[in-house]
Image (cartoon, rainbow, N blue to C red; front, side, top):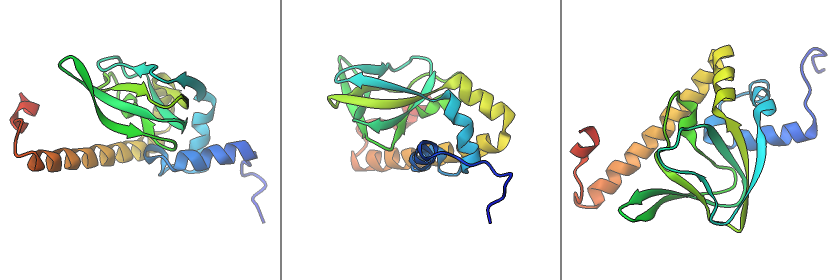
Length: 171
């Protein structure tokens, strides 16, 4: 028998929870915790070649991809080099989970159109302040994400026979 005092969610909310739990930064959260994000979420459509944000912009939101493809690029001299393509069911702009962060890459729409769910930084911080467990779970996922990125970076460095100096990272 279901607890008469437990919150029930409609079909759309349950679908959104399933979608969110498939994304690294939300994977540890229970439905009740995911529900805290629902009022802050906005759907936004983008078209091919639209920039979502530029490198060095303030990190003002995290983006969840409902449909479409986004290239994450870095500026190399006079061109953009793609470092990763992100697709449906993935997120980008993860450093908006941190305070006072700036973007490390440019996000560019590469599909004909893309539907993104935008969760503003200020809303995330309000949720974190009122619920430290949500913050702890999401920060653990963020740390795992950054750790995996570091492992890929170092593997790539080893395979490139040292075309750049890792010491530059710390200067």
